[in-house]
Image (cartoon, rainbow, N blue to C red; front, side, top):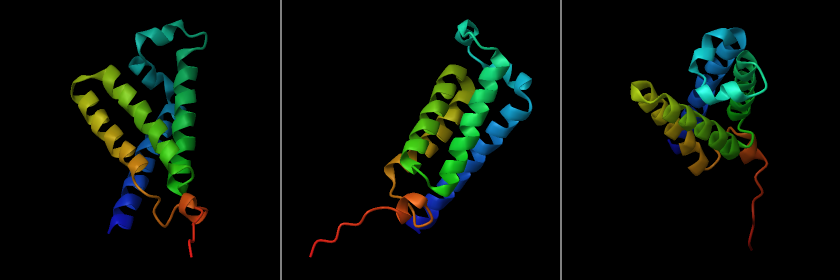
Length: 127
């Protein structure tokens, strides 16, 4: 059952970030309102920031579904979402914080049998 729960967490997190990443790529203007004010000091347009974030979420979500560098990817995505949660606050922030912790739980779990990480994990055989 542990293998199934880890797989479900990984796939669900993948779907979450894939959906939001694709939304940001297809309609970046709708997401500009969510950017913190300090991003206005960056030398690139707000729409481009949204698209860069969308690409990051899509690529990392695909790595997560394959189980490639799962712990690192989960750490990056979870920390990213926690940052969003802290900047948004209120009910949306609480929801995003819970989703961030849900994603970060993958950092502390062993790779399940359906990950690339597990396939290439070195085993130590002490005889």
